[in-house]
Amino acid sequence: MVGLAALLCAACTAPADHTGTAGTYTVTVRAEPNPAALGDTHLTVTVTDANGKAVPDAMVTARMFMAGMPMNTDDDLLPGTPQGKGRYVAAGEFSMGGNWQVEVSVTPDNGKSVTATFPYTIEWKLD
Ligand SMILES: [Cu+2]
Image 1 (spheres, rainbow, N blue to C red):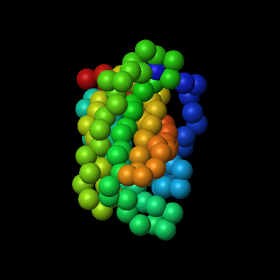
Image 2 (cartoon, rainbow, N blue to C red):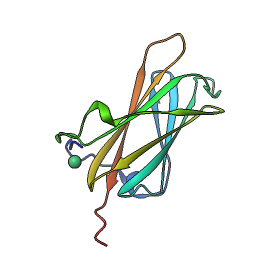
Image 3 (cartoon, protein in one colour):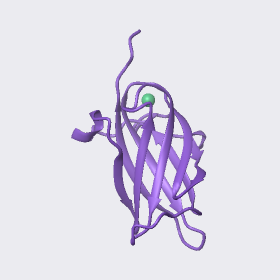
Image 4 (cartoon, rainbow, N blue to C red):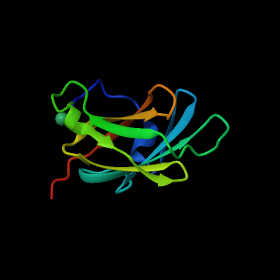
């Protein structure tokens, strides 16, 4: 995990999907449990193209890291499993509380990788 400077993100604490842009794609990330919490998580990534159509055949990975911390390794590269209709699912873990980044990389069949990065604030669970 790694910790960049804390990003201001009002939406992070709401149980909402994160949506951003990767190249010409629109990428939406939902973490389960939702809102994201300490421990194992499933990330569902939805990719649509500039016309709003689902992109079902890209290679999608999600890298979970904390800026400034050494947990940023290739081990955190999680292959997304295509679920059809432009949805991809990856398993991962928020292994500590703090400010996380989830970097989603989309590589289309015939193109180069583009990325979108989403901030997640994870609270320590004290139970
Ligand atoms: Cu960390």
